[in-house]
Image 1 (cartoon, rainbow, N blue to C red):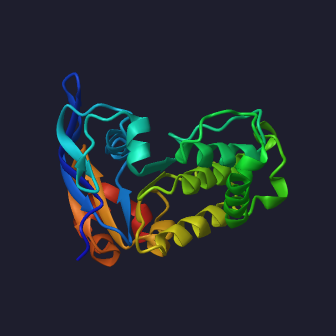
Image 2 (image 1 turned 120 degrees about the horizontal axis):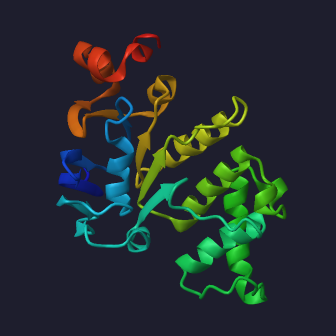
Length: 254
């Protein structure tokens, strides 16, 4: 059994008298995609925000690769190897698709943050950016200004930016939300490709049970901020308590 890459220990956050995440302890290992499910208001996105540092925990801890990162800022957690798509990634709307990915790689390599330097010294960065764009099927749009992209293509670019960071943990919060039927499979294929890396740990918040069935190695269920189920997809989906109380009829329809 590989050592966990990400651990939350009694992770808790209170907003006034409301406990949004209630002592959630969970370990996530490389080579595994864990789907995090539950009804609206269960605490799924709040749990993600605690892990990524968007919200400060009231108590408990977060460990990444054995290191306590509970007190780190979101950017420091990213630098430590935590990647989150769609909420932490900031795109530059007036720059091109290629420039956006190049800047992520440039920051990762600590070569400064000059938006305009495109000298031959950055040729290796450009080549790596081009390879990432090819992976997410955005090569044809490499010179397009980001603000002119469709919603789906912007999401693909956000995934590209996260891939370019080379994190150890990938976090996706409803990655296909708002996407067309034609666009969604591209994102799901990208996540499947990331999952295939035995060194990658993937966390996925998702409502669509067909997506979960196709991608998840494991499901954890949150309800009222607490962890109420954790196991293999077939085991969790077969639980009458989970179906009736936490996932609703949608699960029985797939």
